[in-house]
Length: 452
Picture 1 (tube, helix red, strand yellow):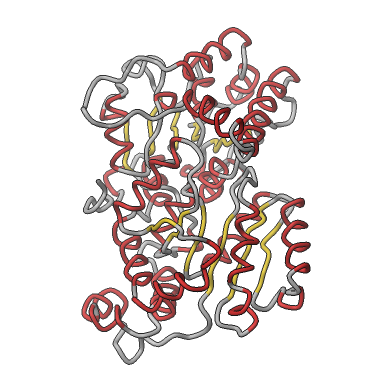
Picture 2: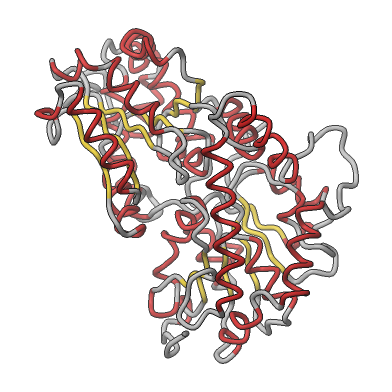
C-alpha cells in the first residue's frame, strides 16, 4: 500500500516495476530515490494483490522463463522459441511506414486487462493518493490508462528497439509519455503512431554510484584506470593521447596499468547461459592460476546458479581461487544484488553478457563481449552495440584465453570502451529526474553520432 506523501516534491512519484527478469527492475533501481518512501512498487507482487492478478503475472513469468530455458533443447526447443518470439517480433525499420496497427501481443495484453479487470485493484490503490507514475514495463502503464488513473503516466523503455506492444493501443489518444534509451526507439515509436511530443530521448537510467554527479567524477576516475588496463602495450594511449589528455587529463606517462585485468560474465535473469560461464572459466584456467586475469561470475539472485558455479569451480580444482582471481556475485534480494553488481562494475574492465539491458552499461566505458541474443529485442540491442562500436560478438569460447588477449594487446578493448563512453547516453537518470520535475529544458541532449 502507498504510504504517506514524501515532502520532497521532486521525489513525489510512484516508481513501478515488475519481476520479469532483471531488465525492468534494473531500470527502476537508479530511480528509487525519487519514489515515495524511496520504495519501488512491484505491480505483480504488492501487499493485497488479488489472487487472480497474481496468478496472471506468475503464469506470464513462468512461461517466459520456461521457453527461454527450453530453447536449448535440440530442434524442438529452438522451434518453440521461434514461435514464441514471433509474437514479440520487432519489424525491420526500413522502409519507413505506418506500423500503428496493434500487434497480437498488444491486443491480447489489453484484452486481458479489460476482460479480467487485471490491474484495477493496483490502479485503485494508487488512486487513493495519486502521484505521477513511472514504470519500466508497458503493462502497468496500460493498466493505469485503462482504469483512468488521474496522474501522469511515464513509461521507461528498456531496449534499443521495441516491438509494437510498447506503444499504446490507440497511440495518438494515449496519455502515456515515453522515456527512451536510443534514437532508434525515439523514431520507432513515431512509426507506431506515438506523437513526437510524448517521447523524451533520455538515455537508459544508469546508477549514479557509477557516474557521480553530472560532471561524471566517479566515471572518469574509473575510466582512467580501465583504459590503462585495457591497453597494456600503450597502442591506444599513444594514438589518442590528445583525446585522453583533454577528457581525463591522462598522459602517456600516467596511462599505466594499475592492477590486473578484470572480466565480468553476467548470466541473464532466466539463467539460460550459465554453462557459458563455466566454459569461460575452463578456458582461462591457466591465466587465473597465474594471476593474469580476474573473473567475476554474476549469479544474480539465483541460488541454483550460485551453487552450480561453486560446484563446477570445485570440479576444476579452482576452489582456492574463490575470493582471489575468481569471484561469484550473488544475493538473495534483487536490490542487494543490483548494489553488488554496480560495485563490481566499477572495477570491471570488460563485460561479457547477452545483449540485454546491460548493453546500455557500455555508456560507463565498458567494452561488451556479446553472447547469443535471446529474443527479437536483443538482436536489435546487438545491432546497436555494433553500430556504436562498443560491442563485439564472442569468438569460440573454448579459445577465450587466446582471442581475448589478442584483442587486448591490439588496443581494441580500449577503443571500444571509449566508443561506449562517448556514443551511448549516460545521463538517463539525471534526465528523467529533470523531466519528472518539469525541467526538461535542463536535460542533456544525448550525442547522436554513430547510432545507426
